[in-house]
Length: 167
Image 1 (cartoon, rainbow, N blue to C red):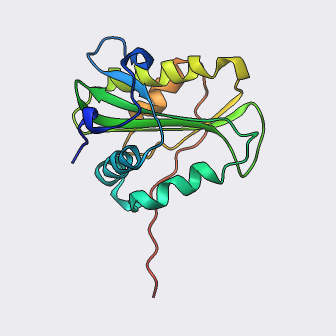
Image 2 (spheres, helix red, strand yellow):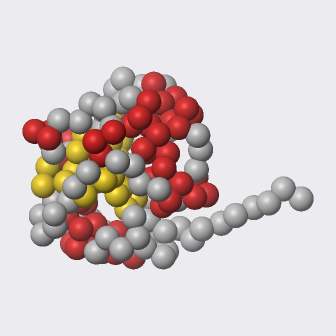
């Protein structure tokens, strides 16, 4: 269930970035109870294995060291949130030029939109002169790897999804 854009507090249309070749917009995330609820709904739809209650999500933002840049956006179609994206310094192995990038979009969003969002985010962090992007791209989402390869990043590894159950 994707969230209704107008029900999310803190969004200003002047902050929105048009995503080229689409009618979608990239809107900066503004922390609020409703925004975290929308983010939890997106995670549940796109990455159900990583789903968690909305009340758990602010902890990540609040516990991030101040020297680690972190930004998150919603992908909005009219008044519906259809995805989310974030880009951050690697907290566990900080280097001012290394980032982790994650984009989650509802089913049916064309690959060209993925490419455009990757390009917007990479452009957004260009002042940091990024030399490494860690992408949460699973083997079943090759279009994400293609998007960053088209921007000049070399593909090094793809991680298959693993699941271990407690015996």
